[in-house]
Length: 107
Image (cartoon, rainbow, N blue to C red; front, side, top):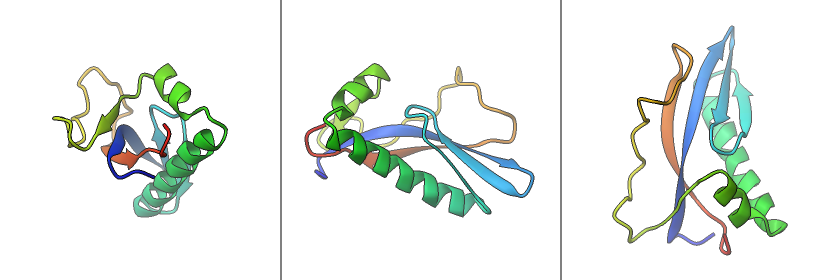
């Protein structure tokens, strides 16, 4: 994956009983774990797998465009993950983070 291109995705984590669930808002990728740390690690791994799988079938660029996910270059002015918008609605008690992910070479 090129180190010069990235996307910023919203990851939302909730505790449901003894299990933590995680959802990537833009991609629809979901995961769970026994702890928030495990849920974060699994979700990040699944997001990367999702992006690489889309690239393998030549659909990464179209998929991101359909979901209005902007691809940034390292030299762009917006290098840091953006703050969560106040208009976004998430369940009370959710843990929300914006994470950067490198995109596949031809995405």
